[in-house]
Image 1 (spheres, one colour):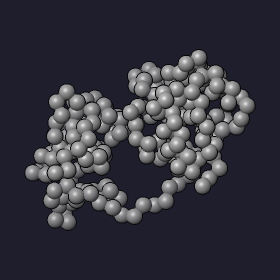
Image 2: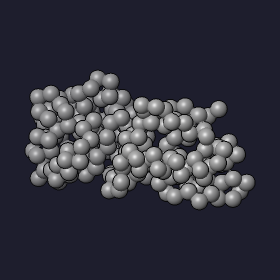
Image 3: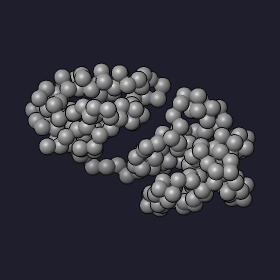
Length: 224
């Protein structure tokens, strides 16, 4: 366990406690604030290694808090919010946020970002693979093999495949897939996701048929 102290600022009763508990399980000393004024007081009174900040808060919103903390280099902030517009992202970064994670999100990804920002490393996992019909997805080598021959998938295609296959039978929207698998400074348009999925299906052949289009939603990988 490390001694890093994290302030979670989140008013949603379904999210805040889960984020705080997840970070505690990861070994962090975590405190939850559920409104803007409480968060402002906590930062003024205590020293924090990191703040996880929602933007839509009662009493005082996240932008106001970022403005107040902008000149306090001791308050690194990761924004965790349902607001996903480019203007909101750029405004957050201009006010000193160090990272941005849109909702909905994976707790594992948030913990990974926290570790990265705090300079901590997670134990190196053992090599592990996922089976996709007659293909095998090597998560460590980020490659797909059929009969021990690597298929020519791009990095973005591998990233999308990892998200889908790691969560079998779960439907993802195109926006969720783009946020999790495509670079923040790249093309995240929905039609770009469609193009990547189409190429993945072709490269996997019959096994690509396991990736189903969920009309009105996005895509799902079927495990059976």
